Amino acid sequence: MKPAAQRTLLALRMLRETPPRLLWNFVVGAGLGNLRAIRRFERRKQHGTVFPPFVFISATQRCNLACKGCWATGVPRPVDMAPELLHKIVTESSAQGCRFFGILGGEPLLLPWLPDFFDAHRGSYFQLFTNGQLLDDALARRLRAAGNVSPLISIEGGAATYAARRGDGRAYGTALEALACCKRQGLITGVATSVSASTFADVVTPAFIDDMVARGAHYVWYYIYRPSGTEPGFDEALDDGQVRALRRFLLEQRRRCRAAVIIDAYWDHDGNALCPAATGISHHINALGDVEPCPPLQCSDARLDLAADVAATIEGSAFLKAFRAEVPTLTRGCVLMDHPAELAALAARCGAHDSSGRGSFFAELAGRPVCGCHNHAGPPMPETSWAYRFAKRHCFFGFGAYG
Ligand code: SF4
Image 1 (tube, rainbow, N blue to C red):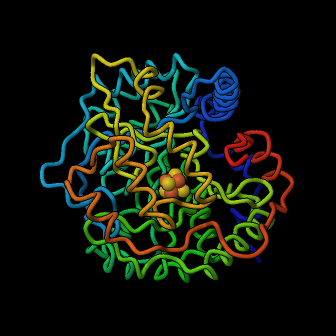
Image 2: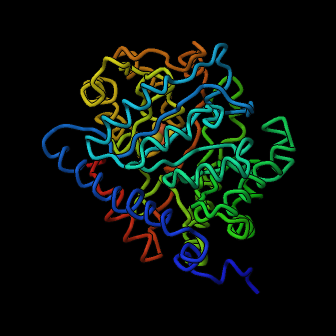
């Protein structure tokens, strides 16, 4: 017999478990708001201007864990973003139609002012990427009061994985407890898992999804491990067979699991690989204000500060413009993984500087082997669930970046 949560449709779960105000904010902020943001993005593109509908912001370089392969590690003097700059980015991006923001780190919950920031931006909706180590009942209650935050808790397999990759096996239990706190407060909560060679057997299983759903997750977001930082661990990258197995698994689970949404941002409705940054749908701003294609790709030719015009700075980035134009001619996959030398050449040609804070991004790039990524061999595997097919086709990735 399936676990109780698995027998319950997601919509019913949310109606039962989520306070009406939070549900309304989610539907308006993350649902309708995103649709409007995407329509405005498409209209802007027709007029030759590009400002992404989704902006991801790392509000700090500090973290309370030091996970192998993470782009946020190895920064000798990590900094926090000034709250005024975060306020400016969200305010000016909202004027471009953005409603939904990803807040990352480091670990963003190290910033004591963050809940007040969410309060001050009730017209926006925030996805909070967190390792969960600081997310206790009091904080979950605080996020419930703000009403416009969905925690996305990173859970990377079991305690053994945490001990090996994060240096602390107890962190796994704390992350699960954070999920329980969010459930008690009725928050709409996600679990993010980065699939690597050593976590594959743990997390690419129906049992993992069922366990996360039973613990309160409303969505499970699968990432493919992108080796980064000073200890990248290239042997942890997925091989092509594992990528295809992951893709098949996602399709099967979308048909099986009705109690949660299973998310990836790697394949369109027809199963063609894509890079979200190359489509222009999202960009990342680091804690210093550097605008980057995405978090692990740590180089930039555009910096935001309190005097900058956010839209003009992002639209004026020659590197981002060249990235959108040239990366689709190189790969439908992840250029960091499968064309690191070409990426280095593109960054150099555009005058992009190292924005990692480590001062070693280009040396790390030069030392990268070519790795496989989500642009797998063999025919594309289209979505087989009509709901996901509809959502991906109409809401997310019909941007024609790949001509
Ligand atoms: S470059 Fe790679 S990691 Fe970055 S958005 Fe594209 S596919 Fe994702």
